[in-house]
Amino acid sequence: MNRVLKHTGAKYPIIQAPMGWIARSQLASAVSNAGAMGIIETSSGETEACIKEIKKMAELTDNPFGINLPLLFLRDEAMVDFVANCGVKFVTTSAGSPSKLLDRLKSKDIIVYHAVPTVKAALKAAEAGVDGLVVEGAEGGGFKNPEEVSTLVLLQAIRERTDVPMIAAGGICDGRGMAAAFALGAEGIQMGTRFVSSQESPVHGNFKDAILGADEAGTWVLNKKSTPCIRALKSERTKEIHEAGLMPPDTFGNIKDLYFGGDMEASVALAGQSAGLIDAVKPVAQIVEETIAGFHEIAGRMGGLASARGF
Ligand SMILES: Cc1cc2nc3c(=O)[nH]c(=O)nc-3n(C[C@H](O)[C@H](O)[C@H](O)COP(=O)(O)O)c2cc1C
Image (tube, rainbow, N blue to C red; front, side, top):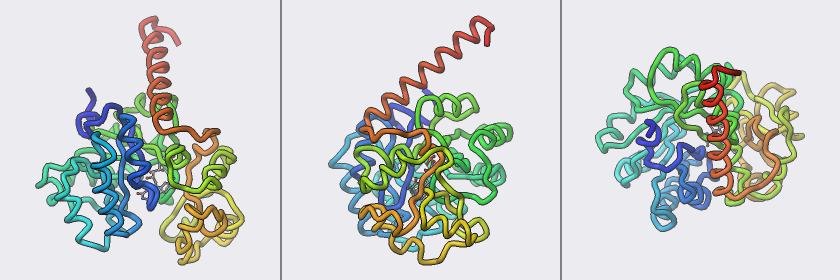
């Protein structure tokens, strides 16, 4: 059993990405029930709603799940207190330095993985004492580091410098991506774009259709000179931001109209380059089973090559 499986307690080393408003009990429980690791978001900043969603998980699944704490957006101490004391054993932190929260979480025996976009951030987090890293390459959807280091390079560069367990994120949506990530040293994968376009995802069909319709060049990295830098689907709205080079501060104001109302021009549709590899809305359990089967098929082929000393 690898370290990510030991740390999560899940059957499979597949983690569903935290996604503001989207990564709630409907999606996360489907992922946990499929043997992977559901994660509840708190980046929406809606403390009461997130606490309710975390409590709901106990009704919807007997399997383990985790919670994400995005340091930059955490305005409410009550959120951290609840997470530290609710009995959850796996937390990912992101967007900031994990050292602020580590002592509090570790004192409750919680496993903490920190999301990093560079080697420097990875080494800092490892030094601070995190149990593992979510290594987030530039291919992925959502908040991004403007340096844009690919998952392919980042995993290798971090593995070269530290033995901390790695969950690979960014550009992975099936067994091929999972096998590639494991070949580079990862012991788990995290998927956002694949799960947001799953059957159990709560987002509007227009958002899922836009992911299905996008090709591998169907996203833009936006707002590189300001913060947050993001990767989102191409649209009229994101074309304007792309051309202006800056994102208006109220861009996320109407995000729920896009996510749940289906108005694709109301805000920006966060998604990664793997949108170009996704061509069907599938149930979460099917996504997980196909990913594991694809991974083992490729691992078997690679094992055969190694035995035969072939290529
Ligand atoms: C729709 C969407 C919303 C996201 N929202 C968040 C968020 O609120 N907080 C966060 O840490 N990451 C967020 N992300 C990034 C994911 O956590 C994850 O790192 C990324 O999706 C992985 O790459 P992939 O999309 O290629 O699977 C979001 C991603 C997507 C697709």
